[in-house]
Image (cartoon, rainbow over all chains, first blue to last red; front, side):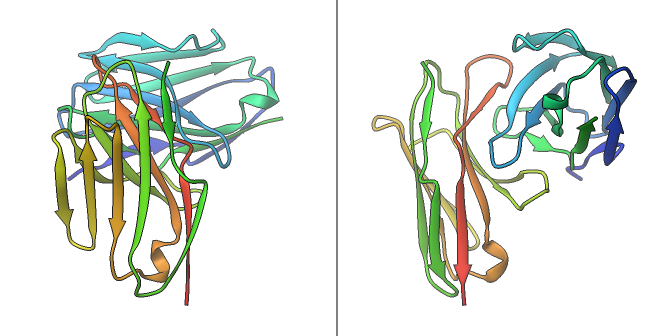
Length: 111
Length: 110
């Protein structure tokens, strides 16, 4: 089983809202990732968690706040987003260097 | 700097063979991935190369030459469902960072 799940599938939020994206994997992977993907562009790395600790923050604005409550879960808290933050947000996980599996993504629209 | 180049678009005929090239110049290298992505969907893992040579997996093969900073993805017996974007990604040294190329949009025609 190489499944990474993400909820919700779609999210529409206003610029003053607070919402959270959730990601879950039960493969025992120790690294989890958040990517942002705009239309017709490749995924861009936002955050990496390794053994539940934040190991990479790619200079992401503070209106995006990641959280790793345990080894299976990864959240992305959203607050005061801008319309240009509308994108597909992808979660991924890996255990070894020769793999990285993506979830189906959350399509976020900021109005 | 980090630079990964792929052709933007390619067109091929159903049943044919197509080769998608990827060249890279990165500060670190810990393997190269190929992903397939259909419009509006998540990337799907196709292959991983870390040593020079060819890896074959069914209709898909991937080749790597580290000395040349070059890889290709070979798709045989093309099917209409192979129409998608193909992403080349280099894994950086350290905690798993993937650096993606811009992707190659492949259109398979009857």
